[in-house]
Image (tube, rainbow, N blue to C red; front, side, top):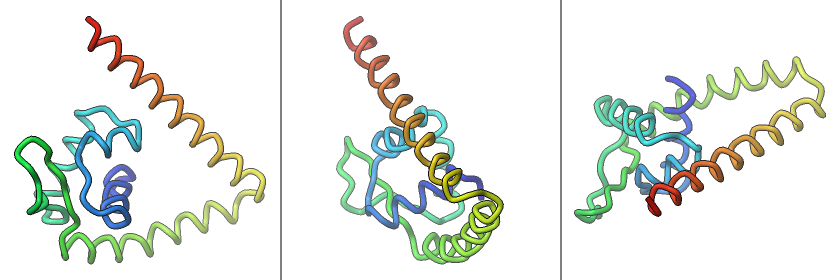
Length: 121
């Protein structure tokens, strides 16, 4: 499982039903990347369209198979993170996440600017 797919599954587990637009904004991913990853997760049976989904707003939920897969993957993910973390100083680890947050926030702001300019055109 690739990082974007893991992140999408984790978000659905933690937040419940989410639409592609919300997921894309959260991770500053373009529409194509989100769509491709959601289609893959749906084909594998790890997510499904929410039964409460309205016609105009599609939202996805984690399935039982998705929860099971996520539980197995989370253990491996934590192990990999612990290995990386043990190779770094605490300050480096903290700084890495500060940089990740800054990059994500900047990408989201730029994406929002592009959307606003497209709407005005």
